[in-house]
Image (tube, rainbow, N blue to C red; front, side):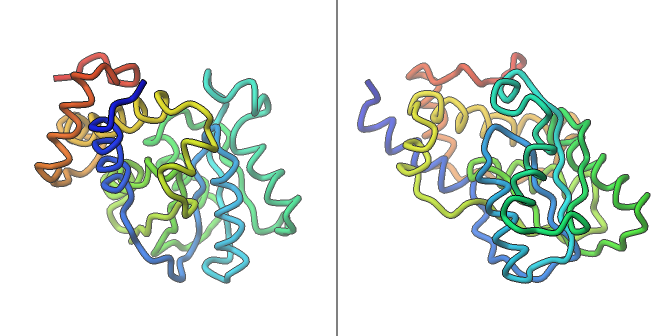
Length: 218
């Protein structure tokens, strides 16, 4: 049973993890692989709205996606995009990345190899991964302007789509933990965490929402 306080704290984290950027015209979109086909759907929607001429889907398979996407996240995303009417010439696949840093660096290398000039990127992720993806991309590809995007949905709707409220809260907590932790390791830029969000994170940790914390949590 999740307490009223924990629900409120989780909502705080959910709101903070989203960058609230307004999608705009970019050189390319990069859809980050995950268990969530909504990333592919949202990337296709942005393409159909004319926000970019080219899509890169990036991601190998993982322990959390193997059953749903046995051929790899990026491959399944591409298949979804083609089903929705995107021409194959508009979709590149990067099938090897196994973390957010590799999503960015491998996509960058793929685009350079293809001779695609990139000045701006629509970075499409799960809603609670927007800020982490943005901070990672800005660190690894500083010459590019990044705009974060995800499927527009409420916290409650996302929980319903996943079907496991506790897991979602655990993921929110784990994603927040990495924001101050990873800059010290050179993985992302540092971003300010409001005191109210930090307090909510601490309360959720004390309440036991810790299954997605990195092992070296300070």
